[in-house]
Amino acid sequence: MVIGIIGLLASIIVVNLTGARKRARDTKRVADVRNIQTASEDYYGKNGQYPATIGGLVTGTQLPMWPLDPLAPSGGAPCAANSDLCYWYASFTPSGASGPQSYHVGASLEDQGSMLLNQDRDCVSTAGTNCPYPSAYTNGFTGADGNGCGGAVSRYCYDIAQ
Image 1: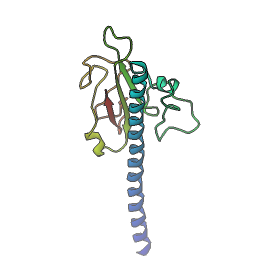
Image 2 (image 1 turned 45 degrees about the horizontal axis):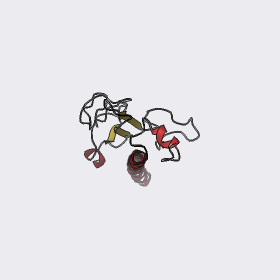
Image 3 (image 1 turned 30 degrees about the vertical axis):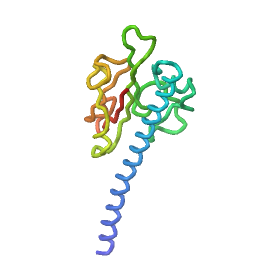
Image 4 (image 1 turned 180 degrees about the vertical axis):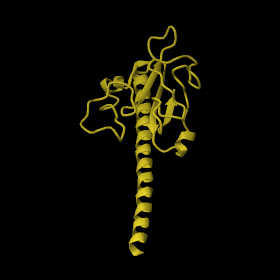
């Protein structure tokens, strides 16, 4: 009986720790997205346009390196494009502009019940829906909360757009 009670308590603790770890990783993802937003605004202030990719923020020295999702394997290949392990970035260049004048950044969260999902943009930059410009963005992705930014099941897209 005592062993059964100890087993039950241990399983409750493990479940609670799993949820806490997901929330901690999601908090890191949102912080990374906001860092990308700040770096993008700095880039715009210096260049009069936003970068076409996150890589532009690295080469422009606004970011020391391409931020990685907390679940990305350490020592893996550096990021070069949109993915759940490297975050999502789309840009839009209006007709006649010399470079991108809008961006859309996203991260795929793990916690479906996260209150952060109530505070994001839900921009669908593949079509321009709920975005600053109502046209398709370069490298667009779906910022709706129902799936990850790239459509991954059991992930939920948190996004911002400017």
